[in-house]
Length: 397
Ligand code: V47
Image 1 (cartoon, helix red, strand yellow):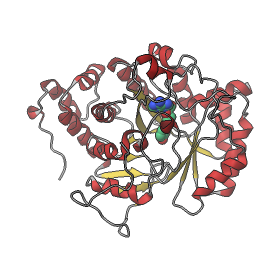
Image 2: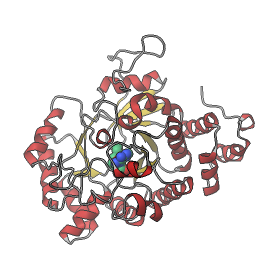
Image 3: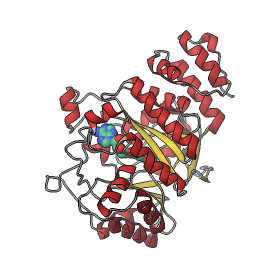
Image 4: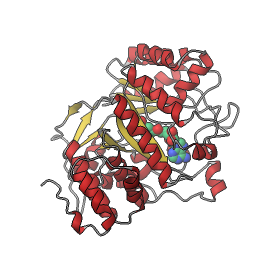
């Protein structure tokens, strides 16, 4: 039964004109975005976002069988990206840099499983050259020709261009020739100059992040985009960020999915400075950021929930708030676990199917370019909601 919207019944009357725009397929403006962030009528907001999503994706929810690989946590921005718990100085306790053999060894996990994508990101290492990454991609392609490689954030691309003294375009071309087919959306944080001055002073600017993604899109490399929320940013900063993403998408059409990322507060200086250690974003904020992403980014086809970050439980609920894309099997998740995530690192393939079915949606396994690769899961057990229904991955309190 398709979702029916009745704006006249919305508790927050301020959402009614926005609902009329959404129903008519008209674009939302900055003021609309601010009104959405300001509302406490979360159910109407969710209903609207679910409507917008249904128009694009029906009742399909996409997921992928992927494996995250983080070749190094050494990062020259260690002391200035104060929200990050993953980075280390080269000689700091816990710092690591994998040899290529070690990367291939970790990738062997994919040998007998369903994995179709490697997701590779890490720190800005002062000494690792572009050849380390191109050799890595070639070596992975040789060993796993059928596995798609999504690798390196815009921040890593800009860093490699700087240390190699070549253009970002050239870095991307060499990576593409070595086997890269798409890029993840990390490093965007919040584009506002004032926010970046506080949380990521020496990271590339918002305009530079956009420039790298534009170049990737021009070269035929599709990318993802993200926003890190729940630290010092305001609603106006979030809407400015989304506006910049939407503008690039109008220009290139190269973004595949948008992933709002919830700030985690363990083991980083920002949380200590803000007196926020142990206090994460709320479920309410998590729902809002998914729903507003769906409504504002009318030209980005998918909105993804990163279950290791918001828990599988919340990832299931957001499927009724405009989300149609669930992060994959992951296998090893380090960035959020360093920052205090209590979820497990790996979601079994069947667990993803179950999570999506449990919300009454139709699971679709996709490849990295969102082409469906499997839509029938009749051989997997069906668990519906109600007594006895459970997800195999539990959020340890
Ligand atoms: O850019 C770092 C974020 C991002 C913290 O493209 C933190 O498919 C919260 O971008 N609390 C990297 N967030 C992860 C990322 C990603 C994840 C899943 C899928 C995709 C994709 C991309 O993690 C960083 C930063 O925004 N991050 N530290 C923290 N303490």
